[in-house]
Length: 252
Image (cartoon, rainbow, N blue to C red; front, side, top):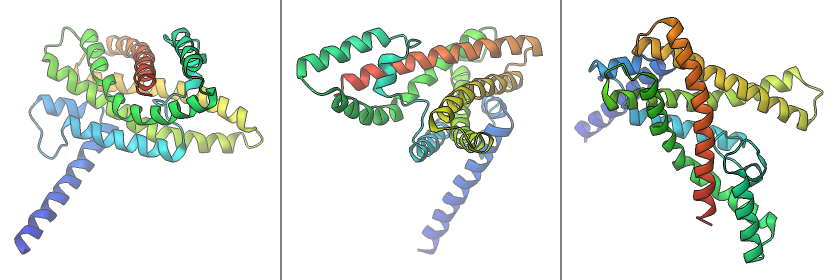
């Protein structure tokens, strides 16, 4: 029993050490985790998949507490957001479903919104291969192989999840302090606008720093690629939301 207890304690402390080391590097030394992984330095580090799982859990835990998630989109937004690629088709599909079943629009929306939260937790992973393709396209001259680009994309996406988990509550509190007399609707509008700007700006800055560490291009070239990366992220978000709508719709 003493031996088993000692082994269990070592496992826990080893995981704790890996967790702290990995997330410290992920957040405060962009690109270092990927550079270490590609150089074969993997001791005392979580694997890219483990980092992604922990970041995903943290994100959806915070999103559940706040009731806000950039990856969970209500039926109303799917059918009304004109920037969504699938918006016209989504509107037609919902109208056809309601006509054929006779279900009330409010009841179907409630069922859809409950299911979409479940779907989002697993579907968010599809953004990683899309990011890997973007990273590969931006850095074709770097001979890492598919695994290297995948690892880099995984680390960047894990940071994106952690950032959203921390940015949303901080921004919400800040706006309440800065705009104490604003009504709920005004606060919501300011939150959406500020959140989007800060989010994409942070994505670009992080990619720039991480790419300089891993790909080692000049500052100007890396800055241009960071801008293209941000544009690609926007389109990836739109594709993800389209996939999320169809998988949720056909699961009801």
